[in-house]
Image (cartoon, rainbow, N blue to C red; front, side, top):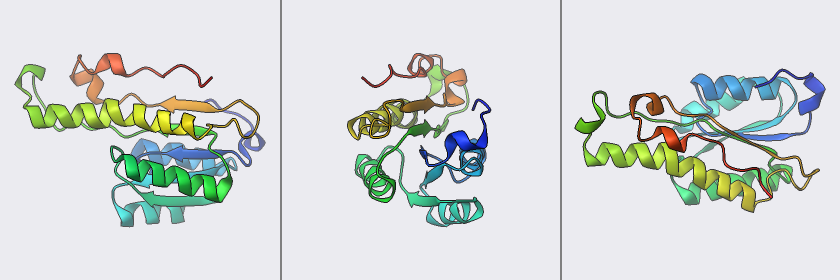
Amino acid sequence: MTETSPASWNGRVVVVTGGSRGIGYGVASRFAERGAHVMLTSRKAEAVAEAARSLPGDVVGVVAHVADEAAARSCLATALARWGRVDVLVNNVGVNPHFGATLDVDRARWDKILEVNLWAPLMWARLEVEAGLGRQRSGDGGWAGACPRTSRSHPAVRPGCRAPARPR
């Protein structure tokens, strides 16, 4: 995240998938420290609740598997009901259930890599754009996509790790 003055994030709404630990938690922490309203998502209820409690400001933790469309829609509905908009989406979740040569990966693991690392970020971005990503405020909504570590291991996944075009 580019350093900005703390006031620049006051009142902004940020959704961070996979925000209960690691890089996602670090990103969420920086936004929260700078005055943003933050929604964290995680598959684990206890982890996301603890992460949300540990951050300053207006932070909510929501249980959601990143590839579950109903859960993603519920997260967005919660953010919109609570704050009226979403300004920034940080797609942070990534998996690598296979270690070794790409040609040795089995179908189930490959499907999981594609679902979590490619489909889920696209789905969240689409849902965020449908919800009017930031446009309720001033038309300057944002999108951030973290390219999962898996992309270095699996060259076929790498082309999917690009930010989509800015919402129209």
